[in-house]
Length: 284
Image 1 (cartoon, rainbow, N blue to C red):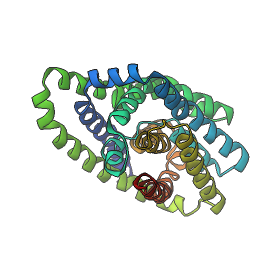
Image 2: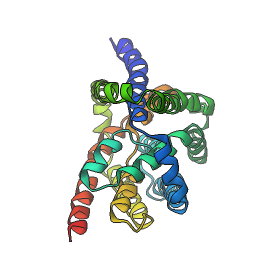
Image 3: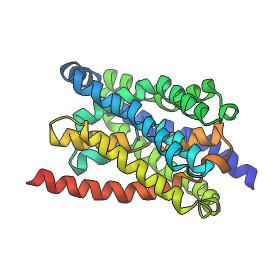
Image 4: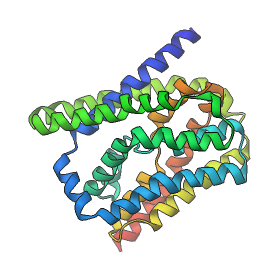
């Protein structure tokens, strides 16, 4: 039973993530994103700096200074290396964010992920001695198959067959999300007993990681209030599906998975408070 569950997780998680990312690509009009990038190149450069450089540096600092347990440390390093949270395209625009800016940033992060994810994870984990636990090429392959290729194919379908994209995008995205949630549940159940062993100090490390990321991305955000909220959320949110996939395929589960459930809960609480505050700020 345990072997069957593990096989289901290792096979099903990537497939569900591919479906979600493909549906995301179906929503993206490449010409619109390229035009935004060209017109706001400095804003995009600052945004990428925040998400791809400063967030991993925050993880590095949190692990080095606060010294959470090894499981939490590896989990935070994987999370810091996993940007472009797939559900942000659906959530942020509904809660005061800028959809065009988000889609452009999201697409850029997804396309860069083939390089940034394995390189960031390699550098971060080597600094803490986790050298033999994963292959850079294996992580790059995971990113290519679960993010880069499905997003790219979705964009192509959108470009050549916009009517088809409009019809299948929402359905495929919803099915992928449901499958992702259903597959995450057994992972979380499997990690639950380990989660209870996480120390209070490790939870403090997660809270600090999230709050500092929100603060940095908010501070470096564009002048436009909606875009500032967008960067704060996109920069601090992590791609849990990708992180779980990397953790399941490249690390021992006891060392990588236990942090994800408490992290999601802590992030939801803190980000909800942040979004409520931002909604009040922008309403004035």
